[in-house]
Image 1 (tube, rainbow, N blue to C red):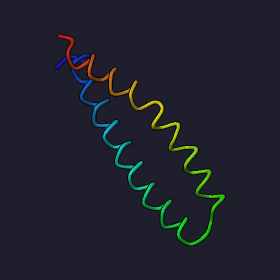
Image 2 (cartoon, rainbow, N blue to C red):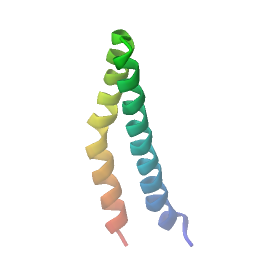
Image 3 (cartoon, helix red, strand yellow):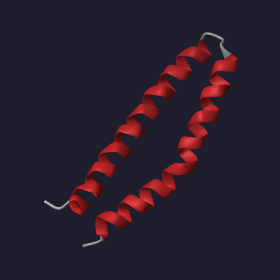
Length: 69
């Protein structure tokens, strides 16, 4: 298998892992917020916004790589 053939599936798996981590962080953030740590929740939401901002570009790039043959 060529290296070029391996890159898109690996990036897809890494992206899926990132999405799973985001979901876990959101759950933990809710838990922290329910206990009154507003500053921590605000900081985490800022980081999650950056991940969300980049997600569309990542998805589109991976889709383009998966289509190329």
